[in-house]
Each structure stands twice: as C-alpha cells, then as structure tokens.
Image 1: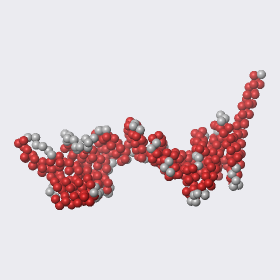
Image 2: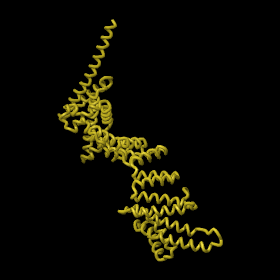
Image 3: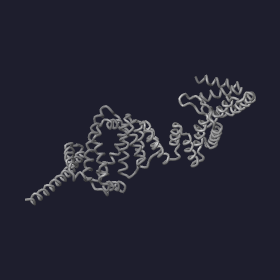
Image 4: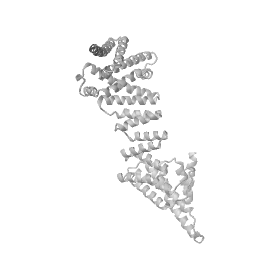
Length: 453
C-alpha cells in the first residue's frame, strides 16, 4: 500500500511539473499568435491575455519560476501590453496633437507604466537567475544576431527597444519636471544598456543623479550617486552630491566620511578640495585645512588656486572676524607671521596663474589689495605702549600705514578692471584715494559709485 502511495505521489509530481511546462508552452504559443496578429495589422489582445494567464501560473510554480525562459516570456508579454497601450494613446492623441514627436512624448507621459516596470523587473530577475543566458544575448548583439535562436532574438530586440523607450520616458518625465521619476528611468536606461552591451553607461547614470538632485529626494540622491561610485564611474559631482545630501539629512559624520573618500579617489579635484577646506574652516579646523592644502600643493606645485586658498586661510587667521556679527576681532599674536604667509601665497598664486584665469586672477588681486589695506589700518590704529614714545611711534605708524595703503591701490585697481561694476572694490578704492590724498581719483570713484545706484 505504501509503495502504491509513493508511486502515486511521484506520478502526481511529474504530472504537475508537466502541466507547468505546458503553461510555458501555452504562453509561448499565445504570444506568437499575438505577434502574428500585429503583423497582420489587427492586434488581437485575447491572445496576449491568454499568454499572460498561462505565464503567471508558470511563475507560481517552484520549478518553472526558476527558469530564465519563463521570465523571458513574462518580460516580453508585459512589454507587449505596454506597447499596445502606448500605441492606443498615440492614436488617441492624433486628433489633438499634430506633431509626431510631441505626440510620442505626450503618449509616454500619459501611458500607465506598470507593464513596462514589470518587464524591467523580469529583465533584472534573468540577470540574477541565469547570467549565462544574458551572456548569450550579449554575445549575439556583439557578434551578430544570426547566432541567436528565434526566441532569444525576440528577447534581445525587446530589451533594445526597452532601452530606447526608457530613455524617452526619462526625457519626458524630466521635461515635465517629474524629476524623481526621471531619475528612475535614466537609471533603468543605464541598467539595460549595461545588461545588453557590457558597457558602463556613464551618461545615463549621470542623468539619473542630476534628476535625483533636482527632485530633492534624499533617498534617490544617495542611491544613484552611490551606484556610480560603486560602479567605478564616479566624478567629483557624485561625491559632492552625497556630501550635500548627508548634510541636508543632518548627518555630518556620513558627510565627512564620503568627502574623505572623494578626496582619496580624486585628490586634485578643486570642488572636493573646496568642500573639505570649507568644512574644516566652518568647524574651526584651520590647521587641518592648511595641512590638507599644502599636501595638495606638494602633488601639484603649479596650481594657482591651491596657493590662493592657502593665502585666504592665512589672511583669515591674520584678520579674524566674529562669526555672528562679522566685525573685526583683535589681532592675534601670530598676526605678523600670518600676514606674511598670506602675502607670499597670494603673490605665488599670481605668478602661477598663467595662462590667466579671470576669476582666479580677480580673487588674487582683490585679496592681496584687501590684505594690504587691512595691514595699513592695523598700523593706523596701532597704539604706542609708552606715553614718551607716543609721538615718534605715531609718526612711524602713519608712515607704515601709508606705505601699505599705496601698495593696496594697484591691486584693487586691477580687480576693478576685471569686474568694473564691483561696488565693494570701488568703495575701498575711494577710501584709499582719500587716505593717500589723491582727491581727483577719489572724486572720480565717487562718480562711478553714484552711477551704480
């Protein structure tokens, strides 16, 4: 009796598995019939519905759901539903939208994407389930589709069309400012391209990151930028985006961690350097900022921008300001040394800025002029320590302040030539002209300032 039960159970399992394989065959036949009806110009949706019903049953079985062929049919059936609905929407828009391209874009925006999503989901499933199958598809696309069987060729063509349409959907979503959805579809385009051709689709990965940034959805920003880094196709933009996203999420530890990784991966990138320097300065870590920059200068000694930023740090150390009010604080004990270091690095930056970058040149000459200006006021406001020395010291201080006021003027004049509408530069020059008794130029600068109002 027991043997009969065991035999019956084995027979039942075999019949069930055969039935499930039969469902895959039914789905194939119904899908083929639907494709034939399209060729005849009369797409018959009943075939496609029958194919869907059969493949869904096969996907519920433990054996057939593990087969790449089952998922390949499911992807093709889902995509066929999407294409049918898209075609119906295009047809509906013919009466209101005469331009063919605009009609297509609107149709992509209006058509329900659940079937497209489902097809993409099964593409991903096949990649994980049967890498060898995907290698066969990749080889066929690379060496010639004639080496692919009929079903594999249809699958490959479907995947290629999905890549194209995913890009169209992404652009349509971006155009309508649905940036979070655009990010998803730019990523899908990159994924399918990578899946089919073994290439790293940097452009669409990047578009996904830009769209995620515009969406301001932190989760998407973190996800897509991290994917580019993990795929080893990152630019400084990805690290910068992650840094800013973590800060927006109030996670300064994670922000600093990703910034360190970015600086390690791209030690000479100026954007990441500036972010790290700004972070150090914002947290009062001026020494760390200097060490960071000086290490960069050792690697790139002719980088004018690196020298300029070091000069700015020493400048800030020589002339500290209250973080809240912005007012000048008392000069530190290291004022003289910090001033000389700032001057040295600004002058070196000017020497290295060849061919000249206009923005860098402006910052260098303005900063150097402002540095001399501040040094002049330092001497003008300096007090004698002993009453007996007051007259003598005051004369020396006045002479020293005039010396630096005169040194400041040509640099600020250069800055004004580079930015001829800059009010702070005009204001500083007018005051310096007055202090150095150049009344004509002071009056000239007053006229220019009035013209700006």
